[in-house]
Image (cartoon, rainbow, N blue to C red):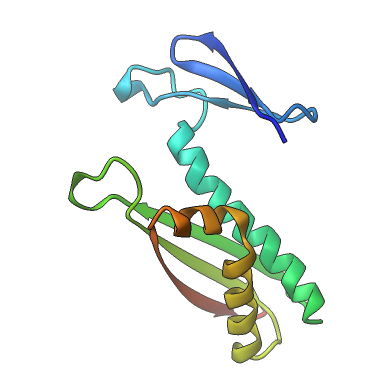
Length: 137
């Protein structure tokens, strides 16, 4: 696995995964950028959200339950002027006929398996979560 970042202009850069995918990172205008994309720090939090979503999907299939909607919000918190996240709140919204216990179990397994979450945990970031079970419309 390899990532390459190439400066493009101002504070903006393009990051590639060397598999044909890329994203732009930049700073907001208030910090001297042109706001052409998320900051690297925001991308880190976005990666956690995406990882939980992906791994939950995989675990749910292994547990043999379906869902019709899935959203994961991650909120990063920097307490006492910390330079990085001290806490992350994960909010999972899922529409499924599975029991609350099955969804909870799936999320617990997901949080243990999510590589991005494991990195956060190893860095000492406190993660809390909540589940909102959506009703079918």
